[in-house]
Image (cartoon, rainbow, N blue to C red; front, top):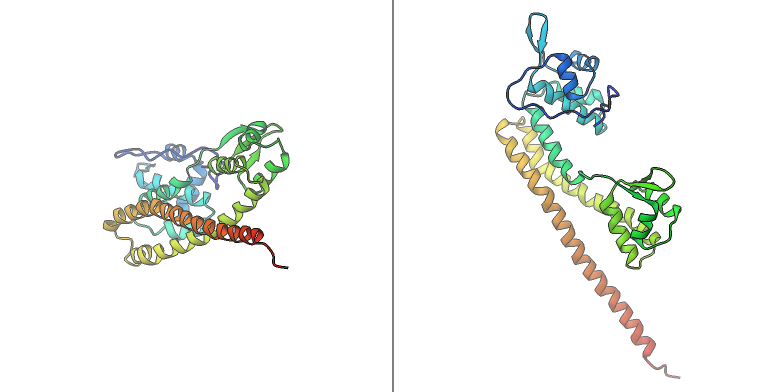
Length: 265
């Protein structure tokens, strides 16, 4: 991830295993930040003091995890002021646990973009090459133009599913218009689900002071609930699709019955 504060694009390395100590230069290189920014974060109280040996400070796992958490939260759009207030007073183990939690939450979003030619995308959907179609997908954040002939699929699974539906006979504009509708409706469901989990599981944990003994339970619950929520959503969608198909079929059959019934003069 990019270091939003330092401007460097280097990815942070995972925290080393076992006991270790790093100089400030080694620490900065390990997390993909500049020494200047590490010093700035330390000055703001985000980093605890290092172990001093003479005039040299040595930094350990807690320092690495705190800086990795700062990078992660900056990338997610949090302000440095908000990060400072939440991280500065955290107990030593909290940064590592929070990183574990964020990684669990990110697993469903761990999508590798794909490069595809414009002709390849059109062939996938079974349509003629049309820049307007790609422009529409780009406007939805699903693809981006690389050059005149190539695009990057930012959400390849969604794009491929949509292309399959178009290949089955639906008009591309219909599929494109359905996407924001489904996204908005599912976001409503997701918000309600997250609020419920937060109120019933996370809030009591926070009110108890984030006890170390409960972290494993919180991580396990979060990891278990994500696939369950996805499975329930798919199951309900299938159920409602079946009901909608039955309703539409009833309407069509009634229309056919009326059309075939002789009119009385």
